[in-house]
Image 1 (cartoon, rainbow over the protein chains, first blue to last red):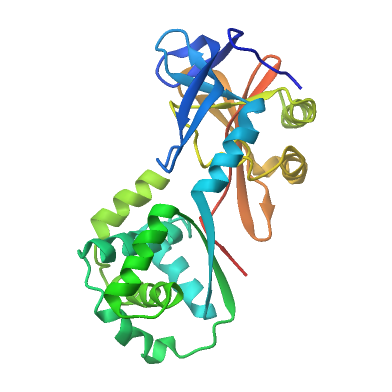
Image 2 (spheres, helix red, strand yellow):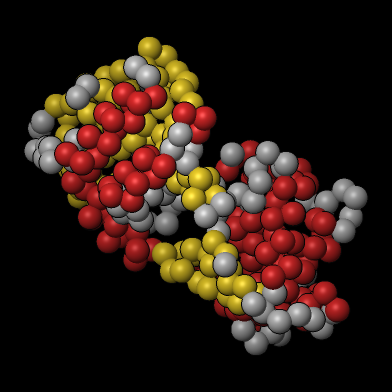
Length: 199
Length: 105
């Protein structure tokens, strides 16, 4: 394996400067989703703009350790048709994105319910609707940050529900009401912007 | 360079550890190889599964003289996206991620 040392030179394409030489230096490098910072790793720094333009393979173990720390895999048992609702809602917002928007859609609702922009009072009623009456036979796995987990706990309290799983189920039913049922989905412009950013 | 040559070269770089990752001032969490969510061996297996119809190229943003290679193999009904370019003698990975942001069984 090629190991680089501080001060070694390399050549890569920098996003801002094009084809450049880089110098490997110690840097604190944040994750793109702002969930954390990996401190003091060897990174390729653009000789023109001074920004981090490359990460050598040898830095992955340190990145991995921080990445795992910032994420928890939350798993929820849900009825099979709930998975279909998420996929269909994602496709309805942007037919080219497939189900890529599914996770972001759930997290979008978690965030807006937490801030009070969306009312959480409907969730309880939705869970006793006919649409919710099915066995939870599928597993929905979401990688969530500590920040989102705290938002989820806050929504559990606000909604009067008893668990994170119930909130997630309620949110999926809310997505059915807001996105799938109406001819024109609610929050469409905003959700299309999110889809564009993900795409 | 044709598809088979590209495939052989990227596999060799992965086997030898002669690769790095693109960074745009930060660590792109969509690059699962960079964050260690997928191993070199798993990436090689996905590359081997890719056929010519699941391969695309396009000029690299930032330097159009360099081609970006995109492998899009299917596994368990979902598409993987493996994007990289070559700067001799190494490979620079731009992204290794799966279509769809959540898993279900």
